[in-house]
Image (cartoon, rainbow, N blue to C red; front, side):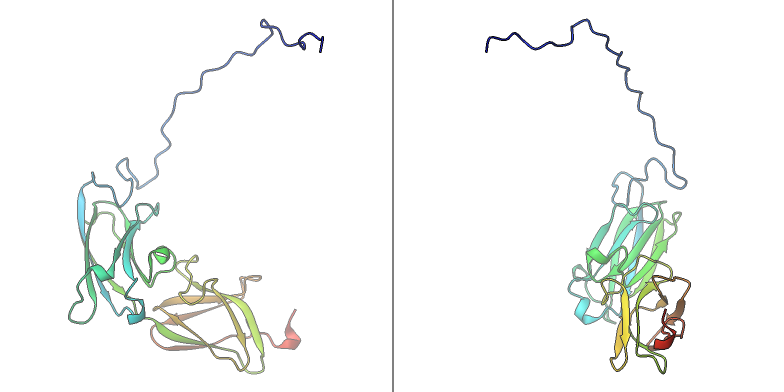
Length: 232
């Protein structure tokens, strides 16, 4: 086009010196986790024996159910052992044997499938970090729990159904953990034995705890199921 090159910075322009990156430093140690504490699957750590006695798993869940073990603090190194890999015992249960790194705190769960191992389990046990051999009992029984409205109330919810010792836990039959009750419509959910809480997600102080140890019926309190005239 008959034009010369565009102006540019000269080679001797003022450039800021480039500082060398700092040498890498080890992160602060977490209490109870040492340098060899890399997960339940670590093969170079001392091993310990763990035996899980599994009972009362509903027949409909047996095909995909299993036992999971993972680090109690980090949640890492999850191992899944399908129940179908183990021979049924005389009472119909399973005896699941595994080895885990010794001197590490682990959580053992019984779940309907691998995706539910951490927060959708049927039963859970924590194993002491100092144990070199441990035996745990895992109960897979599900109990029918009927949730009912108090007299004079037509509707309640949505309410959150939570397991008090694990707020992230989700029921097997309720993917969102939400419960809505309507007059004339029966609401039954099947839950493992444990302590639970129904709460208003907008006003968490409105809550009602109940314990499941077998077939259970729970009638909502008025704080969770106000009459129509009392609704805000």
